[in-house]
Length: 404
Image 1 (tube, rainbow, N blue to C red):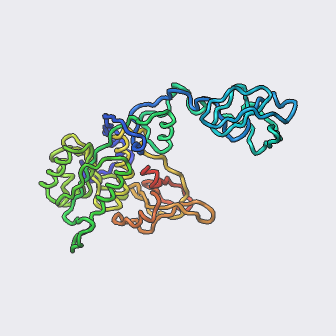
Image 2 (image 1 turned 90 degrees about the horizontal axis):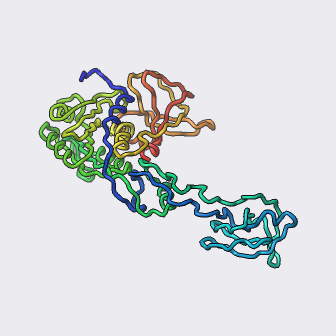
Image 3 (image 1 turned 180 degrees about the vertical axis):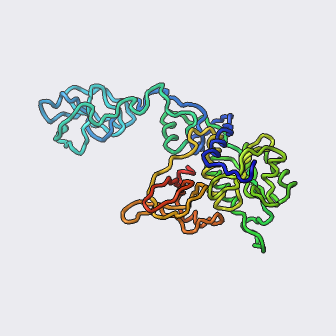
């Protein structure tokens, strides 16, 4: 693989997604533990939802024809939610509450705010139309229809919908097992005394948090010394435990960069060096048939490449039907004077400037800085071979969408 070749982001992403093997093992999860999991099969409604016509408001159930010659009806029944009502007596109204089944014979519900009661009668002051304030049986889901499709990521609203089907446990794909290997003799764990020449291992913490948000199971998290032998041993051991190995560091061209060399020597290397900024040295291959994504060592590079390349690969491997969230088109409030051959993902945030929503970029986009990502709320994409002027439109990916 020529060292001068840079693979475009689009080509690299397609390469990764084509080589992601979705987990094929399903398990049953209680709804209160299924948040963020991926649905393993289509779920169908076994009955109509709602089960019956019900009232959308607190009010009075009536037959519209009974009000054609007057504005008063005697109140013949009281219908709270959860009770099966008797048919509505002709020429009467029934006091009804939100969610209660509409009685047979009634064809409208009049909101209580427009009705007064006097000596057991309801007095109506507004016109009434058939179907008014009635939620029809099956208007949400009809029996036999697909409520949720396989591959759906379960958010709170999906879990609520599953509960409405009467399902307490739902089939989901098992969690993707991921091993994290951070390389470098200079790395020490947070909490240890600082030593000259050493840095705290931020990448492990960042990667573990991203994987947690993506619903993965981290089966190993190890710091690997900068030797060929230690790298071989760590990758081989991780391949016995994980569906995916993510490394940071060791993928550039230095004498102490062993991950790429080990993949070429002991496994396979199918992708290296991308036209992306930050994150150019990213590598992809496999060891013992387990995919390995080798990220650069700089913290901001790890963050950007994890969100834009690792996360889609993980979602595809999880069986998620959506791999990359849609971008938002927004005007920029900054300038880019020099075009680059690499697509740049700038740490940026949305701000209101002169009554307009614009994207502002952090002044220092160094790949070694994480404080810029804390200031930002997403990534602004500067296309390759492009300059920008204030007011130009870019794709913006919010961190919440990228991690959702």
